[in-house]
Image (cartoon, rainbow over all chains, first blue to last red; front, side, top):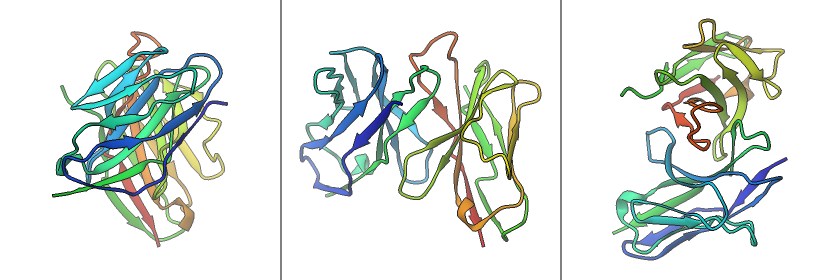
Length: 112
Length: 117
């Protein structure tokens, strides 16, 4: 079945540093790909998504490009802020396209 | 627009006791999910409803877990009896798909954190 692997954390950065969180996937067919974020004390919320190869999802300065050739969907941000400190989850649709399968999450901690 | 509402936010019980979690999805969302999130892990699907029908419950441990969505809106997830290993966060999510596609986006509640002593 479909699965996703993301880099383990925690990732610790200083404010304004460049962020990359790696995510690779295994899938049958053409899944949609997502990054969800979970801020402390809050529920999971969608950060960005891409539904087909070469699509770029973007939101709040974060970007990720759906790379079919490398089966990747790496999350990037050029200059992180303290407020970006959260847990980030990479996800993809399951084979039937009816639910999401999540990675284990990567904790990002940004200090000023 | 109100988001997905879950209650209780926190629950502490002794092992072998029963516990129930409630979820109210976003209005108009026909599909409802229960996910389990263990500490340090990503959410894992327990059960998916389309309207009032449980269309995927293959990951639900049916010996102790049960769920219902009687009128196709609110849902309840029950554990009876609870075991120590059930300590986790139980997440409810809703979506418009498979119809009215949002390309798979799920909307999550804040979760119900269960501690079994």
